[in-house]
Image 1 (cartoon, one colour):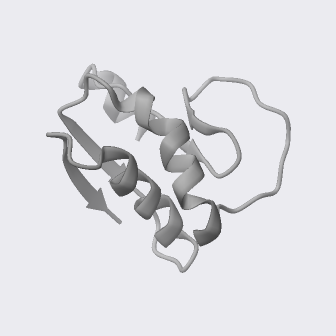
Image 2 (cartoon, rainbow, N blue to C red):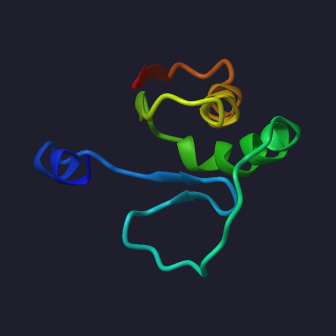
Length: 89
């Protein structure tokens, strides 16, 4: 995904369950944490400012039960802004 984003000159971010939106080469300490439904509102508030200026977001993910809070976070962070959100698994 990163290579494709770079070829298209698109911004690429990773949604960390602990650190929010990260650039792909941003160093972080090791952690073992999956975002939970109870954390969605706080994480959405955390990442919402990072979405300023975007008109389209493509959310790439694998299928699995743990994905729902991540997608909910992005949807909540987008809110009523005019940002097209596409989810691809």
